[in-house]
Image (cartoon, rainbow, N blue to C red; front, top):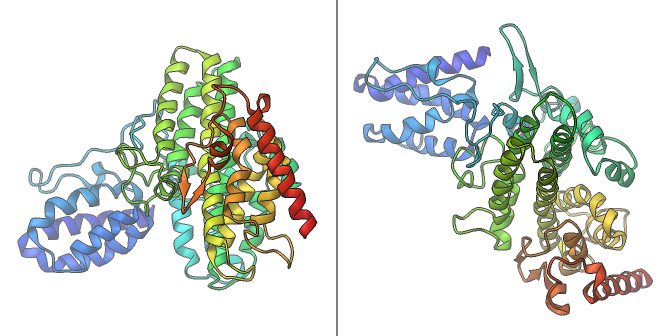
Length: 475
């Protein structure tokens, strides 16, 4: 709060120096005070402001371009439009503050969940701090992980509660209501596996080891957030069916806020720069570029589908249609798994040919992506899970990354994709690897039918079984 007050004064002085031609000479001074602070906010905005204010001499005609970028950063820096106020009463109008139903990437919540969405700012801050090792146990980024800073959920005059990433990782919401909670515990052999890995890694003083940074951030992004989202969905579903007085729409909106994050902005599709964002919305948009699964507005088909589900869920809750809402919850839950599957395939492509001792971050990120989705894969197709483990999870000194090739990894998801109700079309293709290769080889699926009832399943299962048995014989 103290830092926010200091930044507020610096922001007011920067606006004054940009508008008052007698103070133009002060622009670089105040810009050097503000621009570094914006490293905790949207990367694209910081880079644009740096280009306007630090990389060249300030030009008065840029004022109308710079001011909106500054105003978009107020909330991230911890102050409001009202606190900044209007400049000289009528020269620069006061901007509009966030409202209760502030849009997020085109979705309009019914409840005020803007602060919940800010957990991505903590991940962003942790990434920045990991660039500068802080001695024993990486204590500074560890504190951000354990205690949080940005996602204020209950603020009053004297104190405030903050949703931290560790609280998300160990949340009772996940334990009670996630439909896959027992599958994750069974597969990993313990509760709160992601948190255990993260805390152990914090305690490993690796200096400037970029693989450590990649492991920590990918477990937060792909592990902690994914399981927490499942808990939020399960909570919304149970509250709709139950007798509680609490509105399940709040939990539905919280799911949307956590899936999208605060760094995407308000525009439909989110930020047009994939350098912004940390949540699964951003993962889906980045993978969509690689897998050719963008829509005509250049964001992920998956996210477009998710927006439709989010609005549908709101409407179903409004009319208390819990039967159809349960179906929407299931579709949203399994849709958000698709970016994880794409990530596994993507890093299978990138990691092929690397040695197990390589320092490439992709080895770590690919393994985390695999472990984040393997409990679900194992539930539906244990043979497929073993193929993914063999190629993506470092098990011993004899491990060879992607030993069977990335197409084998993609094929392993084939039956699972049908089980979760989406099929392989949303996954797409990348670098010659086709998620739908087995479908092309065996023919189209039955309309709405289960693979287990037709020849497609028999052929695919047979292929998986023969492949795994042959690979095991060779090893």
